[in-house]
Length: 70
Image (cartoon, rainbow, N blue to C red; front, side, top):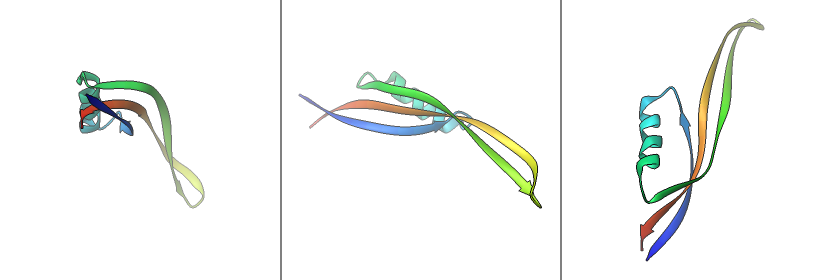
C-alpha cells in the first residue's frame, strides 16, 4: 500500500543541478506531476536612481504527488 505526499518546488532553468532534480521527478515512476507553470523573474540593477542593467530568468514551479511505502 502506498501513501502519497504532495510536494512543491521551484527549479531555476539556468542552474544545471536544479534541472537535473526536475528531470529526476519526471523520470521517477512513483511521481505524478499535478501542476507545472513557468515564471519569469526580472532583476533590475540601479546606480544613482538610473537603470544600469537587467537580467531575466525562467523558473519552473512544479507541484507533484510522490508515492511512498508507509
